Image 1 (tube, rainbow, N blue to C red):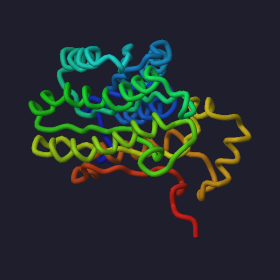
Image 2: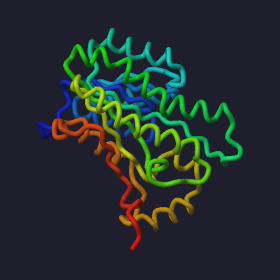
Image 3: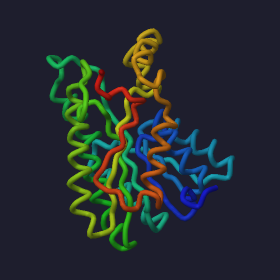
Length: 255
């Protein structure tokens, strides 16, 4: 494999890695030699993915976690350091976004959305920072979204607010952590064909959405994983505080 995409000396933590975009991220890094830990509420799915990858001579493990619990987040990173000795690439991909009209958003929905999508990112990065400092650097990557930072979507005001916060985190954390040689970047997916997206609409709706994408199709999870690979690689070692929009051109202005 190209040297720039050889991750055989790296350890990677992927939250929400059991399905969809997260699964593609796990596969991309594992197949390129990284040792990968999946942290997901869907433990059965995560374990099945780990077993499938390990048959292919990969090194993947799975753990159960509720990212809304800050204490559990710190314990996860501590466990990883105890068992693996280091963490090179932290990828916060897990997301919570129940489709809910604005007037029907409850405190519980908003609090869990912010806890999983935004607060967990703070605690994961804070927990990993001492390890990054001892190692002389690290990489934090986040699955953000075009929804919130760039566009709006009915029923996702809570999610949009959390992702706008994620992009603010990326810029400010990158500035503060640069002196520790910790890079912080993100990917903003557009409409990606995943099980979670299917929950937002039926096949006909998805076909209509795809017809309005300039590149003529919905995105694939692998499209996001490819951007993550680049941002984690040495090719991007002078990039921090940035996001890459991966949306097939959907957010380009119409002429």
